[in-house]
Image 1 (cartoon, rainbow, N blue to C red):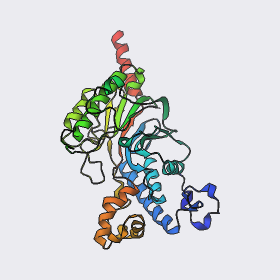
Image 2 (cartoon, one colour; image 1 turned 180 degrees about the horizontal axis):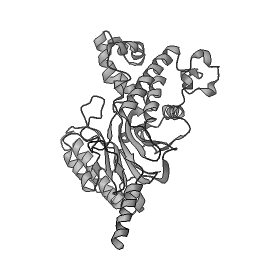
Image 3 (cartoon, one colour; image 1 turned 120 degrees about the vertical axis):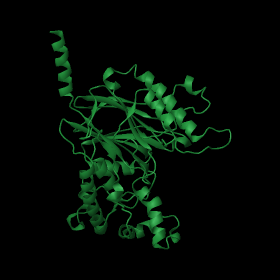
Image 4 (cartoon, rainbow, N blue to C red; image 1 turned 135 degrees about the vertical axis):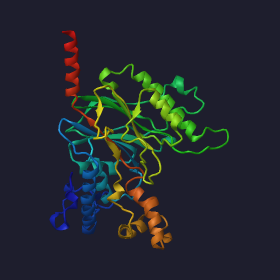
Length: 388
């Protein structure tokens, strides 16, 4: 991690090339004063401790930490502070591969985060999905090249015209999913990153409901993947589907479509709320893998995975924390005249401001065992013994 911007002003020469958090539109002025730095460093220390307590450590040749995170309109929201970008980078740094949804066409904040992470962090990006339904969104994977490599497999999943042209509900998935391969230790696998149709409304009479649109997106995607799985190299058939699925509690029939193709949700995440309001299970990770592809388990046998609630450590919902950000909230709100009381500040802070600083989704993750040597050797030994 590159913390150079957080050094006190007295230690910083007027050298723009050594700093990241600069205002490109205002003669590259520094975006953080000493008060900002003090607050950011204090909160980073809390965040680091929270990550240490909630996320397993990275171990050499033994584990891989995979995460997925919808970063709300990342690039479109222009009021994200340098402070927030440090927190986003710190969380990404806790994992080995993190799939990011809602990266917009403007990559300014994305590139700042990559510079904070350091040169050993690499990324892949898809193009934005064109059209209003695409919401100017692209998919990205950020990965620690010291622990995982890009296998060379990369592409987008597009519904064939002969299927899409005759579909009465949708022509394509609103955000074109990406299909990317990675390697780490004994593991070679592919990841499909998705951001499915949102909403739980009936829409206009005669129009398909949000659930019907989402179900059709999944049905077409599963048909496409079923075909892909017969054609891609054997080692790439360990496949993971993850992302902002926008699946609600009554979307069980949609989950059944995923399960029917052999994809199973990690039980370390099953049923856990993943949005900032902690009332929906939008972000999921489904796996279709062979016997050697193992998710780490805890002492009870449950797969190791979870939802990291960063708001337990930064932008906490306490009067003291909210008071600190009053001036920033006034500066960022379109009509600050409505912020007339502590209750108004608290409501705006929780409903909008902290979500625009970080996201309205929380990162979800699981731990993959990368060393399959014991099970592999046991299997081969048993076969040799059987042949003797």
